[in-house]
Length: 123
Image 1 (tube, rainbow, N blue to C red):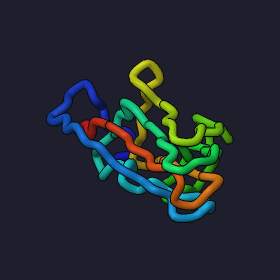
Image 2: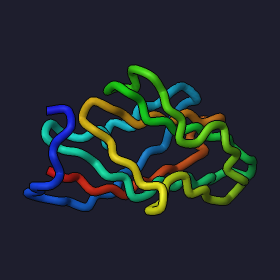
Image 3: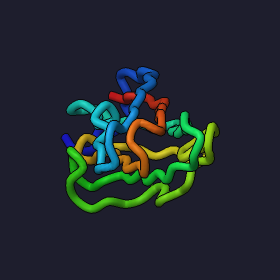
């Protein structure tokens, strides 16, 4: 079931996930890919720069799992200032991630950004 009907919800679980990309390659945020029969509603994504230099970040929702398919960028090469945070998604721009989709992150400096995401797993 690629897109569950959320009218007849049986459970909603609040979750928080963390990601520190260890390199500048594309990193799939696997924790945000929902289990079968589940859809994840992303409430927020925050990128915190823990270095003394600005670091660019790109976040996309991909049309297939494991970072496959077409990348639809939510944020594209936005510089996160030194020792600061950037809100990439919040409740005014919340989005759903289906089980056949994935969230992908690319950073300009390895291990420089700490990302957190709060989401609801809906079944």
